[in-house]
Length: 260
Image 1 (cartoon, rainbow, N blue to C red):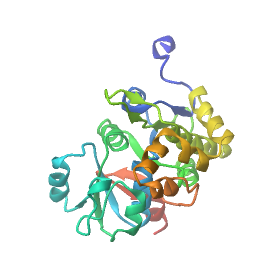
Image 2 (tube, rainbow, N blue to C red):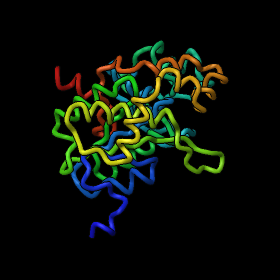
Image 3 (cartoon, helix red, strand yellow):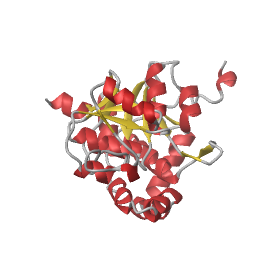
């Protein structure tokens, strides 16, 4: 039986697999937690918004249906970075979200992190959003739930990006975000870490995440497009205490809910 499940990373308490297919393969079969990591920029945007008290509704498509979905749920729709206006100031840009007016509900479309989160909840998984800003807070909260053991594993899912042919492009920033969570969980006694999770941990510990985000492919793309502020916000390591937990179709700060 074990040989038939070579991909399951059993019996590790902290596991890692890439993108939507990896998340689908490793979820839905036993009790555990899925941690989606999309540093530039979905999970960083979710962290910024939930820290302000906004309920964030993930939506997997950035098209006209997002506005319809937002209207149905009485939420503000986030627009593309370049579509921000005074009337529509909310976007996937973490820097823009910091400055935008507060809204109680926000639909945040993303073909990577958002689609992974939405699909995982449909399969019955418990989902948390992590980035470099809140990696330590997420790890502490998960450890407090008893997560990070073989019986209640944590599955780290770096979302990655897409090539023009829609194939997965593993993204360094997401590897580092997942590695930050893995490192924090290991320090809290979680484990054992699978080799995949341990490799992410080692990468994070070996690199300067601020410099790496600025110079990696995704960071260069954003900076060249005029969104250096988003890279800077995403590189603020462990400044946030927000733990965005997906429940009833929306991310909210579980740490704030616990203390309130």
